[in-house]
Length: 63
Image (cartoon, rainbow, N blue to C red; front, side, top):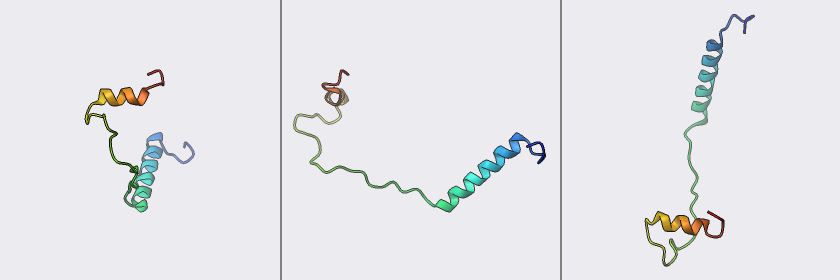
């Protein structure tokens, strides 16, 4: 740093510029589909009942 006459701020700014430039070259991020096969909620599960879902998720796991 000292021999190049650069401050820490200069180094950080250069690094951020390089990271942003690299991101432009990579293109847009696309999230791959991650759905599961199945028929939706199981019988007896009430839509939007988060307490019931939490109980089922932690059933037998001490939660």
